[in-house]
Length: 146
Length: 217
Image (tube, rainbow over the protein chains, first blue to last red):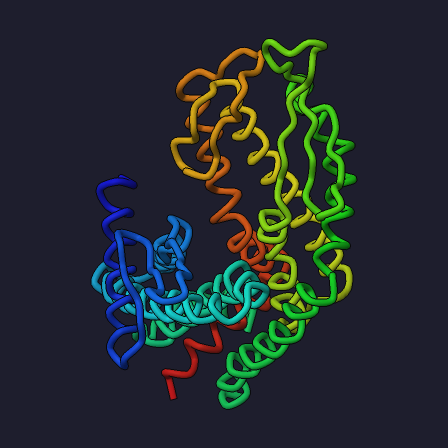
Protein backbone atom coordinates (compact mmCIF):
# COMPACT_ATOMS: atom_id res chain seq x y z
CA UNK A 1 0.00 0.00 0.00
CA UNK A 2 2.71 2.43 1.03
CA UNK A 3 5.03 1.71 -1.89
CA UNK A 4 2.30 1.51 -4.51
CA UNK A 5 0.01 4.33 -3.43
CA UNK A 6 1.53 6.67 -0.84
CA UNK A 7 5.05 6.96 -2.26
CA UNK A 8 3.89 7.79 -5.83
CA UNK A 9 1.38 10.23 -4.36
CA UNK A 10 4.09 11.97 -2.33
CA UNK A 11 6.33 12.07 -5.40
CA UNK A 12 3.48 13.74 -7.29
CA UNK A 13 3.03 16.20 -4.42
CA UNK A 14 6.75 17.03 -4.57
CA UNK A 15 6.64 17.42 -8.36
CA UNK A 16 3.58 19.69 -8.17
CA UNK A 17 5.09 21.82 -5.40
CA UNK A 18 8.36 22.15 -7.32
CA UNK A 19 6.47 23.14 -10.47
CA UNK A 20 4.51 25.79 -8.56
CA UNK A 21 7.72 27.19 -7.04
CA UNK A 22 9.26 27.46 -10.51
CA UNK A 23 6.15 28.99 -12.05
CA UNK A 24 6.77 32.57 -10.82
CA UNK A 25 10.53 32.20 -11.28
CA UNK A 26 11.56 30.42 -8.05
CA UNK A 27 14.31 27.82 -7.96
CA UNK A 28 13.61 24.19 -7.06
CA UNK A 29 14.85 20.81 -8.21
CA UNK A 30 12.72 17.77 -7.50
CA UNK A 31 14.07 14.23 -7.13
CA UNK A 32 11.45 11.68 -6.10
CA UNK A 33 10.11 13.06 -2.80
CA UNK A 34 12.88 15.62 -2.25
CA UNK A 35 12.71 19.30 -3.21
CA UNK A 36 16.10 20.98 -3.28
CA UNK A 37 17.25 24.55 -3.83
CA UNK A 38 19.94 24.35 -6.55
CA UNK A 39 22.01 27.25 -5.20
CA UNK A 40 22.00 27.06 -1.39
CA UNK A 41 21.49 23.29 -1.19
CA UNK A 42 18.56 23.49 1.22
CA UNK A 43 16.30 20.49 0.76
CA UNK A 44 13.11 19.10 2.23
CA UNK A 45 11.92 15.53 2.00
CA UNK A 46 8.19 14.92 2.09
CA UNK A 47 7.58 12.11 4.56
CA UNK A 48 4.57 9.80 4.82
CA UNK A 49 3.03 11.88 7.59
CA UNK A 50 3.17 15.01 5.42
CA UNK A 51 1.05 13.61 2.59
CA UNK A 52 -2.25 14.96 3.94
CA UNK A 53 -3.74 11.50 3.41
CA UNK A 54 -4.24 10.93 7.13
CA UNK A 55 -6.25 14.15 7.49
CA UNK A 56 -8.34 13.15 4.49
CA UNK A 57 -8.98 9.67 5.91
CA UNK A 58 -10.15 11.20 9.20
CA UNK A 59 -12.45 13.59 7.35
CA UNK A 60 -13.81 10.75 5.22
CA UNK A 61 -14.46 8.70 8.37
CA UNK A 62 -16.35 11.61 9.97
CA UNK A 63 -18.49 11.95 6.83
CA UNK A 64 -19.13 8.22 6.88
CA UNK A 65 -20.37 8.47 10.45
CA UNK A 66 -22.74 11.35 9.70
CA UNK A 67 -26.19 10.48 8.32
CA UNK A 68 -26.10 11.22 4.58
CA UNK A 69 -26.58 9.46 1.27
CA UNK A 70 -23.64 7.90 -0.60
CA UNK A 71 -23.66 10.53 -3.41
CA UNK A 72 -23.62 13.28 -0.75
CA UNK A 73 -20.70 11.58 0.95
CA UNK A 74 -18.89 11.16 -2.36
CA UNK A 75 -19.24 14.88 -3.05
CA UNK A 76 -18.03 15.66 0.47
CA UNK A 77 -14.99 13.41 0.00
CA UNK A 78 -14.16 15.08 -3.30
CA UNK A 79 -14.44 18.57 -1.83
CA UNK A 80 -12.46 17.49 1.24
CA UNK A 81 -9.72 15.94 -0.89
CA UNK A 82 -9.36 19.14 -2.94
CA UNK A 83 -9.37 21.36 0.17
CA UNK A 84 -6.86 19.29 2.13
CA UNK A 85 -4.54 18.56 -0.77
CA UNK A 86 -4.52 22.20 -1.93
CA UNK A 87 -3.61 23.39 1.56
CA UNK A 88 -0.99 20.66 1.78
CA UNK A 89 0.70 21.96 -1.37
CA UNK A 90 0.72 25.42 0.22
CA UNK A 91 2.25 23.83 3.32
CA UNK A 92 5.07 22.17 1.37
CA UNK A 93 5.89 25.33 -0.59
CA UNK A 94 5.78 27.53 2.52
CA UNK A 95 8.03 25.13 4.45
CA UNK A 96 10.46 25.11 1.53
CA UNK A 97 10.83 28.88 1.84
CA UNK A 98 10.60 29.12 5.65
CA UNK A 99 13.35 26.51 6.00
CA UNK A 100 15.71 28.67 3.97
CA UNK A 101 14.93 31.61 6.20
CA UNK A 102 15.04 30.13 9.72
CA UNK A 103 15.39 26.63 11.15
CA UNK A 104 13.50 27.57 14.34
CA UNK A 105 10.51 28.90 12.40
CA UNK A 106 10.67 25.88 10.12
CA UNK A 107 10.42 23.52 13.11
CA UNK A 108 7.51 25.45 14.58
CA UNK A 109 5.64 25.63 11.29
CA UNK A 110 6.44 22.02 10.39
CA UNK A 111 5.72 20.35 13.72
CA UNK A 112 2.87 22.54 14.90
CA UNK A 113 1.29 25.25 12.80
CA UNK A 114 0.63 23.41 9.57
CA UNK A 115 -0.65 20.20 11.11
CA UNK A 116 -3.15 22.16 13.18
CA UNK A 117 -4.16 24.29 10.19
CA UNK A 118 -4.83 21.20 8.10
CA UNK A 119 -6.86 19.69 10.94
CA UNK A 120 -8.89 22.92 11.23
CA UNK A 121 -9.26 22.89 7.44
CA UNK A 122 -10.73 19.38 7.67
CA UNK A 123 -13.10 20.43 10.47
CA UNK A 124 -14.32 23.47 8.54
CA UNK A 125 -14.88 21.33 5.43
CA UNK A 126 -16.87 18.91 7.58
CA UNK A 127 -19.09 21.67 8.99
CA UNK A 128 -19.54 23.28 5.57
CA UNK A 129 -20.48 19.89 4.16
CA UNK A 130 -23.11 19.52 6.90
CA UNK A 131 -24.36 22.99 6.04
CA UNK A 132 -24.51 22.06 2.36
CA UNK A 133 -26.55 18.92 3.02
CA UNK A 134 -30.25 19.40 2.20
CA UNK A 135 -32.48 20.14 5.19
CA UNK A 136 -33.73 17.07 6.94
CA UNK A 137 -36.12 16.46 9.77
CA UNK A 138 -34.15 16.87 12.97
CA UNK A 139 -34.72 14.35 15.71
CA UNK A 140 -36.21 15.39 19.05
CA UNK A 141 -32.86 14.84 20.72
CA UNK A 142 -31.11 17.31 18.44
CA UNK A 143 -33.84 19.92 18.86
CA UNK A 144 -33.55 19.72 22.63
CA UNK A 145 -29.80 20.08 22.47
CA UNK A 146 -30.13 23.31 20.49
CA UNK B 1 -33.14 33.05 17.27
CA UNK B 2 -32.17 31.88 13.83
CA UNK B 3 -29.67 34.72 13.47
CA UNK B 4 -28.18 33.77 16.83
CA UNK B 5 -27.71 30.22 15.65
CA UNK B 6 -26.39 31.51 12.38
CA UNK B 7 -23.64 33.42 14.21
CA UNK B 8 -22.81 30.64 16.64
CA UNK B 9 -20.52 28.69 14.32
CA UNK B 10 -18.83 31.85 13.02
CA UNK B 11 -18.16 33.16 16.52
CA UNK B 12 -16.89 29.77 17.61
CA UNK B 13 -14.51 29.60 14.65
CA UNK B 14 -13.19 33.14 15.20
CA UNK B 15 -12.64 32.48 18.91
CA UNK B 16 -10.95 29.17 18.11
CA UNK B 17 -8.54 30.80 15.68
CA UNK B 18 -7.75 33.62 18.12
CA UNK B 19 -7.03 31.10 20.87
CA UNK B 20 -4.85 29.01 18.57
CA UNK B 21 -2.91 32.07 17.46
CA UNK B 22 -2.31 32.93 21.13
CA UNK B 23 -1.69 29.49 22.57
CA UNK B 24 0.63 27.94 19.98
CA UNK B 25 3.35 30.60 19.99
CA UNK B 26 3.19 30.65 23.81
CA UNK B 27 3.40 26.87 23.88
CA UNK B 28 6.43 26.80 21.60
CA UNK B 29 8.31 30.01 22.25
CA UNK B 30 7.57 30.57 25.97
CA UNK B 31 8.38 27.02 27.00
CA UNK B 32 4.87 25.77 27.80
CA UNK B 33 5.62 22.50 26.04
CA UNK B 34 8.70 21.89 28.15
CA UNK B 35 6.71 22.08 31.39
CA UNK B 36 4.23 19.49 30.17
CA UNK B 37 7.09 17.30 28.93
CA UNK B 38 8.69 17.41 32.37
CA UNK B 39 5.47 16.12 33.90
CA UNK B 40 5.16 13.45 31.24
CA UNK B 41 8.77 12.39 31.75
CA UNK B 42 8.09 11.87 35.46
CA UNK B 43 5.01 9.81 34.62
CA UNK B 44 6.96 7.84 32.02
CA UNK B 45 9.78 7.12 34.46
CA UNK B 46 7.30 5.96 37.10
CA UNK B 47 4.91 3.92 34.96
CA UNK B 48 6.73 2.57 31.90
CA UNK B 49 9.25 0.32 33.72
CA UNK B 50 6.22 -1.57 35.06
CA UNK B 51 4.80 -2.11 31.57
CA UNK B 52 8.14 -2.95 29.94
CA UNK B 53 9.73 -4.79 32.82
CA UNK B 54 12.60 -6.08 30.68
CA UNK B 55 12.58 -3.35 28.09
CA UNK B 56 12.71 -0.06 30.00
CA UNK B 57 14.33 0.52 33.37
CA UNK B 58 14.66 4.32 33.50
CA UNK B 59 13.69 7.46 31.55
CA UNK B 60 15.89 10.47 32.21
CA UNK B 61 15.93 14.01 30.88
CA UNK B 62 18.99 15.13 28.93
CA UNK B 63 20.44 18.64 28.84
CA UNK B 64 19.15 19.07 25.28
CA UNK B 65 15.60 18.23 26.50
CA UNK B 66 15.59 14.81 24.83
CA UNK B 67 14.79 11.68 26.84
CA UNK B 68 17.36 9.01 27.46
CA UNK B 69 15.72 5.60 27.84
CA UNK B 70 17.79 3.02 29.68
CA UNK B 71 16.72 -0.46 28.66
CA UNK B 72 17.15 -3.75 30.43
CA UNK B 73 18.66 -5.25 27.27
CA UNK B 74 22.34 -6.19 27.36
CA UNK B 75 24.63 -5.22 24.51
CA UNK B 76 25.97 -8.48 23.07
CA UNK B 77 29.72 -8.94 23.43
CA UNK B 78 30.25 -6.04 25.83
CA UNK B 79 32.68 -6.54 28.75
CA UNK B 80 31.74 -5.57 31.37
CA UNK B 81 28.09 -6.00 30.44
CA UNK B 82 26.46 -2.81 29.20
CA UNK B 83 22.78 -2.12 28.85
CA UNK B 84 21.46 -0.58 25.66
CA UNK B 85 20.05 2.93 25.63
CA UNK B 86 18.09 4.92 23.08
CA UNK B 87 16.94 8.50 22.87
CA UNK B 88 13.60 10.14 22.19
CA UNK B 89 14.54 13.42 20.55
CA UNK B 90 13.18 16.80 21.65
CA UNK B 91 11.70 17.26 18.19
CA UNK B 92 9.79 14.01 18.52
CA UNK B 93 8.58 14.90 22.02
CA UNK B 94 7.42 18.35 20.94
CA UNK B 95 5.37 16.78 18.20
CA UNK B 96 3.88 14.25 20.61
CA UNK B 97 2.52 17.04 22.81
CA UNK B 98 1.31 19.29 19.98
CA UNK B 99 -2.33 18.48 20.75
CA UNK B 100 -2.51 20.23 24.13
CA UNK B 101 -3.00 23.80 22.85
CA UNK B 102 -5.49 22.53 20.26
CA UNK B 103 -7.49 20.79 22.98
CA UNK B 104 -7.45 23.86 25.21
CA UNK B 105 -8.47 26.12 22.32
CA UNK B 106 -11.34 23.81 21.37
CA UNK B 107 -12.55 23.57 24.97
CA UNK B 108 -12.24 27.30 25.67
CA UNK B 109 -13.95 28.28 22.42
CA UNK B 110 -16.95 26.06 23.14
CA UNK B 111 -19.52 27.50 25.56
CA UNK B 112 -20.11 25.51 28.71
CA UNK B 113 -16.56 24.24 29.06
CA UNK B 114 -15.39 25.08 32.55
CA UNK B 115 -12.11 24.57 34.32
CA UNK B 116 -13.19 21.09 35.33
CA UNK B 117 -13.42 19.98 31.72
CA UNK B 118 -10.13 21.66 30.97
CA UNK B 119 -8.49 19.70 33.78
CA UNK B 120 -10.09 16.41 32.76
CA UNK B 121 -9.19 16.95 29.13
CA UNK B 122 -5.58 17.76 29.98
CA UNK B 123 -5.29 14.68 32.17
CA UNK B 124 -6.87 12.46 29.52
CA UNK B 125 -4.66 13.82 26.76
CA UNK B 126 -1.63 13.42 29.03
CA UNK B 127 -2.41 9.75 29.52
CA UNK B 128 -3.05 9.21 25.80
CA UNK B 129 0.22 10.98 24.95
CA UNK B 130 2.06 8.82 27.45
CA UNK B 131 0.48 5.72 25.92
CA UNK B 132 1.58 6.94 22.49
CA UNK B 133 5.14 7.49 23.65
CA UNK B 134 5.06 4.00 25.14
CA UNK B 135 4.07 2.77 21.67
CA UNK B 136 7.05 4.57 20.19
CA UNK B 137 9.38 3.01 22.77
CA UNK B 138 7.84 -0.39 22.14
CA UNK B 139 8.56 -0.05 18.42
CA UNK B 140 12.11 1.15 19.11
CA UNK B 141 12.78 -1.84 21.36
CA UNK B 142 11.34 -4.10 18.63
CA UNK B 143 13.77 -2.62 16.12
CA UNK B 144 16.62 -3.25 18.57
CA UNK B 145 15.83 -6.84 19.51
CA UNK B 146 14.92 -7.85 15.95
CA UNK B 147 17.86 -5.85 14.60
CA UNK B 148 15.94 -4.75 11.54
CA UNK B 149 14.60 -1.36 10.46
CA UNK B 150 10.99 -0.49 11.09
CA UNK B 151 8.74 -1.47 8.22
CA UNK B 152 6.81 1.79 8.59
CA UNK B 153 9.26 4.51 9.64
CA UNK B 154 12.51 4.65 7.68
CA UNK B 155 14.06 6.77 10.46
CA UNK B 156 13.65 3.98 12.99
CA UNK B 157 16.76 1.85 12.41
CA UNK B 158 18.62 -0.60 14.65
CA UNK B 159 21.81 0.46 16.48
CA UNK B 160 25.20 -0.73 15.18
CA UNK B 161 25.39 -3.32 17.98
CA UNK B 162 23.12 -6.27 18.75
CA UNK B 163 21.22 -6.68 22.01
CA UNK B 164 20.16 -9.72 23.92
CA UNK B 165 16.45 -10.33 24.04
CA UNK B 166 13.76 -12.46 22.49
CA UNK B 167 12.95 -11.05 19.01
CA UNK B 168 9.35 -10.07 18.34
CA UNK B 169 7.38 -12.37 16.07
CA UNK B 170 6.73 -10.93 12.63
CA UNK B 171 3.17 -9.80 13.37
CA UNK B 172 4.16 -8.31 16.72
CA UNK B 173 7.00 -6.42 15.04
CA UNK B 174 4.57 -4.97 12.48
CA UNK B 175 2.04 -4.21 15.21
CA UNK B 176 4.63 -2.26 17.18
CA UNK B 177 5.54 -0.35 14.00
CA UNK B 178 1.89 0.46 13.43
CA UNK B 179 1.53 1.63 17.04
CA UNK B 180 4.47 3.93 16.44
CA UNK B 181 2.86 5.23 13.25
CA UNK B 182 -0.42 5.94 15.05
CA UNK B 183 1.44 7.71 17.84
CA UNK B 184 3.56 9.81 15.50
CA UNK B 185 1.00 10.83 12.88
CA UNK B 186 -2.59 10.23 13.97
CA UNK B 187 -2.88 10.50 17.75
CA UNK B 188 -1.35 13.97 18.34
CA UNK B 189 -3.90 15.59 16.06
CA UNK B 190 -7.02 13.44 16.41
CA UNK B 191 -6.92 12.82 20.18
CA UNK B 192 -7.69 16.47 21.11
CA UNK B 193 -10.69 16.51 18.76
CA UNK B 194 -12.05 13.24 20.13
CA UNK B 195 -11.58 14.40 23.72
CA UNK B 196 -13.33 17.66 22.86
CA UNK B 197 -16.30 15.75 21.40
CA UNK B 198 -16.32 13.49 24.46
CA UNK B 199 -16.24 16.34 26.98
CA UNK B 200 -18.49 18.81 25.15
CA UNK B 201 -21.19 16.74 23.43
CA UNK B 202 -23.79 19.49 23.80
CA UNK B 203 -21.49 22.18 22.48
CA UNK B 204 -20.56 20.05 19.47
CA UNK B 205 -24.21 19.22 18.86
CA UNK B 206 -25.06 22.89 19.04
CA UNK B 207 -22.39 23.62 16.44
CA UNK B 208 -23.78 20.96 14.12
CA UNK B 209 -27.33 22.23 14.58
CA UNK B 210 -26.26 25.84 14.02
CA UNK B 211 -24.72 25.07 10.64
CA UNK B 212 -27.70 22.96 9.62
CA UNK B 213 -30.27 25.59 10.63
CA UNK B 214 -28.58 28.18 8.49
CA UNK B 215 -29.74 26.62 5.21
CA UNK B 216 -33.38 26.66 6.29
CA UNK B 217 -33.61 30.42 6.09
